[in-house]
Image (tube, rainbow, N blue to C red; front, top):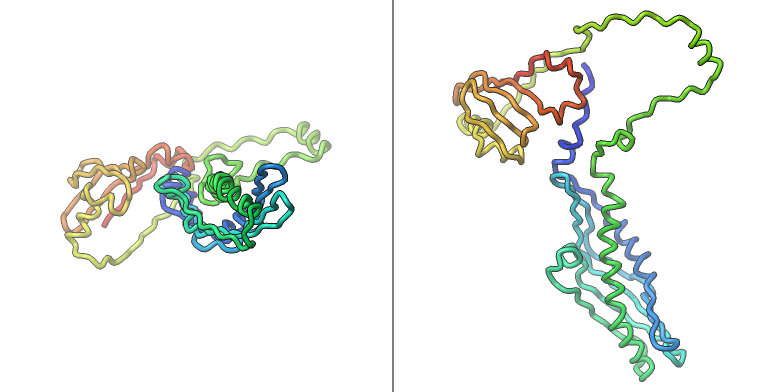
Length: 293
């Protein structure tokens, strides 16, 4: 039996997939947030010195050929600074929610909970004010970069590319021997055998299954155009009458009902849209595709 051809990209990318990248996300925050440094007046400097905790889930999903970032985390940082008199200033910062809804949808504002662990003084308070006024803007710029990096880094693992060079299709091997090429050029060409229309491997597949449902319900689920989208997740056209055409999966599958005997069963001819036929030989058009229940 021949190995089934892979689904075309338009079909493979339609269904829901997701990838958990929580560990990668935590490492990204630890690396990128600690690169933030702000310079104030004179020698004043404040920076994110470490990311002490990232609590939450980070995923990348795909639905209907669209990549969707899914993340909701609490981020806890340690910040530090140097006052104009050389005093080292330290504190902590907790951001209760870094999420898709805030970063991309803008449904609410970020919340910053600050603390100062260095004893207060005018110079220390100046650094504390610098941290609270300047670090949020730099952090929010990094959070926006995070959503982009998430898609750029992991999107290729979910999306099936239509480009053969990205889908693992091996390239033809280049010739490495000049001598063998010359000999091949001198040798007489072998006669090309005539193409045989019957050379395509064919097989008959019979699949049986049991459905824990009443016959009326199952018949309606498979033929009622209002109920078909429940299992195809796409618009459908079906009048459920013999000798009428139907369209499934948004036009990906088309055919005609040969016979219908509700609720006993149906028999239908199947056809595939041209956009999904790229992996098929044109000679397959001569074959019969029929399904019955």
